[in-house]
Length: 95
Image: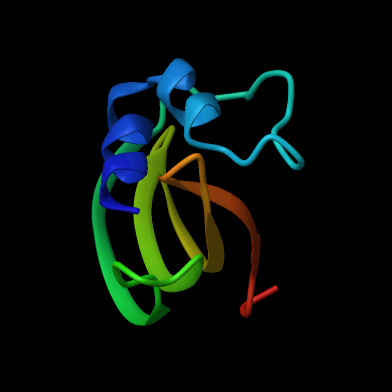
């Protein structure tokens, strides 16, 4: 999760796509070059340990786009693919 946040901060579409589950991965992302990420707070985790095949992370990420504050609250689902953790999908509790 933290490495994916860092990839958003750095605008690394290649890394984001490489760490996305094959079954749900989009062809490309519409990253916003003007978006400035301000912080990540992990609220909760479920499973995701060394013996697990799935895990969940609830987080809040804050950013600013063209002077407007943005708050992303997501419950993300991850799974192992070929031994690596990849992002599957997420729910947005504030939506």
